Length: 314
Image (tube, rainbow, N blue to C red):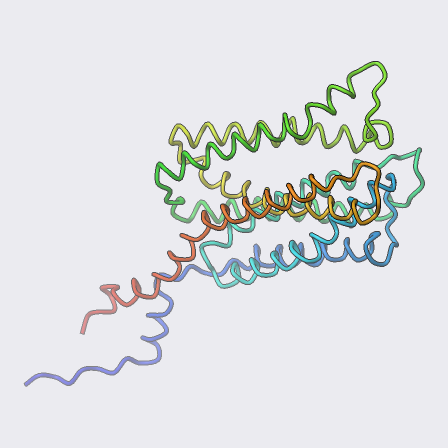
């Protein structure tokens, strides 16, 4: 006589739902929620809204800061909250996605803190340095926490074609940063009598950006690009993270360009604003294609749980 099929108990159903589901990363989620709040706070107290935080920079620099604040308030802060919710649920995409705002905030807020013209232009940015340092420190903490979480996950599964395409893109980005953005102004700055507005009006910001882009961003892009072209799996995750950060930076540069046009800055350029917007959209689309498999992987977890042998025994 065949025994009637057993009805799953509540405990069994909970076990089925839990198998294959990674635990939530509360630490990463808390850091991301905090970062979103800090980024929004900086934007609100700055020249975009309340104008309580006065950076020591030129009028053109203030236009650029307003554009950066728009990006932080409209894009980066909500992105941090969204990824924080993914991290709280234990979504496998959260650690990779979290590295994008970490790259963005450390890069931008380092410039906001160090690129001021102390002793030359009036302002009170030093009084808000704890806020700026908190954004930078939280960005570093997010990068560390996300990197630790990634060690417990399977590496990103990329085809050789995708590796080569991403490697070429990173090398193109490095070349654009060096040649398209910085070469002409760097040559001018090294002359006996430079004429560029940036190096003359805000030399601190000028050289901080040059040091970060030419000393960190471009070499890192070249290193990861070569690694991907040679099929090195270690380059996949940092490349995905850097491209996410580049997407956010691209929108920030685009917003800066449009803000400079709106403010009537003498060095504003319609071509730069339109070009930066197009590049930001393209890099965002490419980064989204890299992240999409992580969401497909998450959707397969419940089916794997139902096939778990421990739950199939009568």
